[in-house]
Image (cartoon, rainbow, N blue to C red; front, side, top):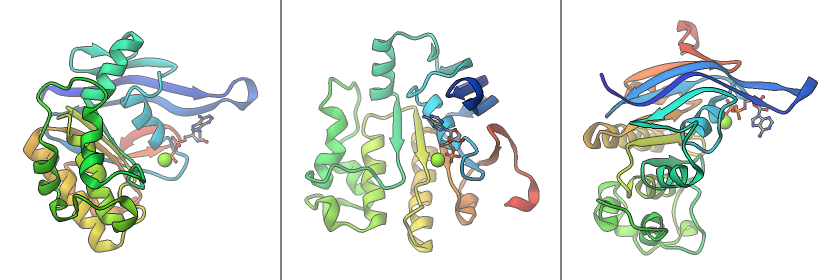
Length: 227
Ligand SMILES: Nc1ncnc2c1ncn2[C@@H]1O[C@H](COP(=O)(O)OP(=O)(O)O)[C@@H](O)[C@H]1O
Ligand SMILES: [Mg+2]
């Protein structure tokens, strides 16, 4: 297996002095092309911190983060901006859509910040996530599940190698949750995207290729009874 994304012995401290929080404690993980990895764990255990470090939004206190041939812990700010724009897709809990934009314009948005080689067609992508018929709607005219689908399409339009997803089903009912995570799995498998999804939702884990658990900043195999 060739890892697209790898974290080696990553530690992230927040704060200073007596107030220091060890959000990530010697975390190592490799994610391969086309693999959807789920990360479960209690609130405050470091799951969002893991995504922030993996997505070059936060530089870890120590350890190494690699995306392909780039070391994200030593790359220049310019290189990191390029990596975040083109090679990584983010999906957040609420979909994080821009209120004034139509679904189609949300998906086009990542292509407007600079040249993206080999982008996917926004219209085709919207169809692929089942939202073609609501291309002209704005977020307030969409359900939670529909917003998530648009958010996923937006994250994938640059054809990223890595997709990072934080609690995508937090606002969704059971059926929509299954649909959204099923969609993430399909995109990972069919387009070879190395994906990490953080979730509290144990009902969606069957869509994932691997499940890891975060406890107090440490990442490891799942303790059986917690799943
Ligand atoms: N920017 C920050 N400054 C200080 N502490 C933070 C910051 N971000 C997260 N933390 C702390 O780091 C720990 C892990 O947080 P987080 O990664 O958000 O966990 P989770 O996503 O699993 O709920 C928590 O104790 C949290 O309070
Ligand atoms: Mg979180």
